Image (cartoon, rainbow, N blue to C red; front, top):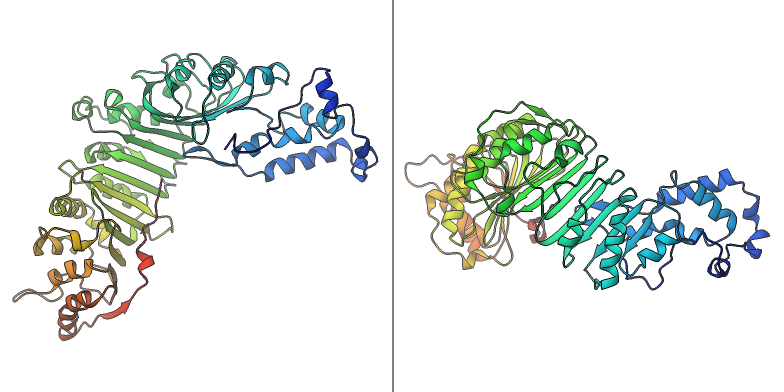
Amino acid sequence: MPGCCSTIFYPPLIRRSGLGRRHGFGGNRRLSSSPIRILNDDVLLNIFDLYRLAVPFQYGEGGMLNFEWRRQRWWYKLTYVCRQWRNIILKSSSRLDLHLYCTNGVPVADMLAHSPPLPLTIHYTSWRNRITAKDESGILIALSHRDRVHHVDLWKLPNVDKFVTAMDDRFPVLEYVYIDSQTEVALPFTFQAPNLRSLRLWMVFLPIGSPLLTTSVAGLVVLSLLDIPPSAYFPPSYILTRLSLMAKLERLSITFDSPNRDVEGQSRQTPDMITLPNLRRILFRGTATYLESLVTWISAPSLRALHVNLFHHFPLTVPRLCRFIQSEDLTFRAVQVTFGVLAISLHAVPWKSDTPLMLQLRCGHLRLDWQVAATIQFFRTLSPVLSVVDHVAFSHEEDYPPSEWPDDVGRRQWRELVRPFANVRTIHVKDDLTSKLFPSLQSDDGEPPLELLPKLEEIGYFGGEDAWDALAKFLNQRQVSGHPVSLRLVDPSMFDTPQYL
C-alpha cells in the first residue's frame, strides 16, 4: 500500500528550477552514448506503452490492491532518466494513461502546483497508515479539481463524511469510485459523474431520488451498494428501474444491513422485464422476499456467479430464484452443505461451469433445529435444481464441531434435508457429522430401503470408529436390497469450503 515503500518518486516538476536540474532533466551524459539512443521517439513510445501494460493492475471489490500504486506511478522514474524520455512520456499522456497519484504522505498541493494537468487518482487508506491533517487537506484539495478527478478510493478513513460532502458537484471525467465508510454517510444529492464505470459504496448510500443512478449509468460496469443502512432501504422497484438503464453492467452487489419490511411493501407496481446481457456476477444479502422480487424481472444470459446471503425470516420459499437459476442455465452438478454457528451455507458448482455459486441462510441464532428447519424449507423450493445434483458433501465449520451440537434435530428433519438429492451418486460426510446423519438415513420397518438417495453408489467419509459404526447398518441395508454402496476414506482437506466475494 502507499506509504509502505521506502522511497516515493514524485512526478517531474516542469518549471525550470534547481530541483529539475538535480534530477537530470537537463540530460544524462551517460545515456547520450548508450546504444538505446539509436531508438527513435516512436519506438520508445511503444516500449513505454508495453511496459505500462505489463505493470500489474486490478481494481477489485476491496478497492485498489497493494500493487496498484506501482501502476499509477510507473512513469515517474522514467521521466527522471533524461529530457527526451520525459518529453515523449508527457506529450503522450493520453495514450499512456498518465495520472497523478494523490495518496498518504504525498504533498498534494505542491505536486499539483508543479506538475502537468493530468487526471487525478485519489487513494487514501487508514490501513497501515495514519491519516494526518496534511493528508486530509490533500484529499480536499484534490477533490476541488473536479474536472481532473478520475479515481476516488477512500478506505475506512476517519471523518470520511467531510470528504464525501465535498463531492457535491459534477465530476466530468470520474470513472471509479470506491468509498468504504465505518459510519453511515450519504452521497450529496448534487453529485454527478456522467462517465462513471465503477461505483462501490460501503455504508455510503444514495439519497432516495438521487439522479446519479439515472444520469450517470450508461457506461456503468460495476455497481456495489454494500451494508445499506435501514435509513436508506429502498424497495425492489426502485433499483429495478435503474438497472434497466445499465446495459453494460457486469457485476451487481446489493447487501442490506438489516431487513425493512415496511419499505419492501411500499411499491407493488409491475416493472418491465430487464435484460442485462453482460451481467456475470450477482451478490445479494437481504430477505428472500426481496430477492424473489429482483430475480423475477431480471434476465442475465451471461451470468456465471451467484452469491446469496438470506436473512432468516420465514417464509424461506424461493421458487422464483429456482426458476432464475434454471433459466440462466446454472443448474447444479455438485453441492456442499456447510453447518456453521449462525448460518448454513450451500456452495454449488453448475454443470456448465467450474465457477461456484454460494447460497447462504444466515439464521441469527444458535438453535440447530431451527437452522435445519429453515434449510429444509429452502431446499424444498430448490428441489428442481437439487434433484439433478450428482455429488453432495456435508461439512461443518471448524469452530462448530458436531460433538458440541445439541441433540435437537430429529430423524425426520435429517431425512427431509437429504430428500431433494434424488440423483446423487456420491456423498461425502465430514468426521462426526457421519454419526449424526446416517443413523437417520437407515430404513425402519415398513420404509422402502431406497426411499432416500436411491442412486447412491459411494460414500466418502473422514472419521473414527463412531463414524464407521454409524455407517455399518446403512451399508448393510443397501447390500441386502441389492444396491451396494462402496465406502472410502477421503482427505479431510477436501471439505475446506472456499471463500467467495
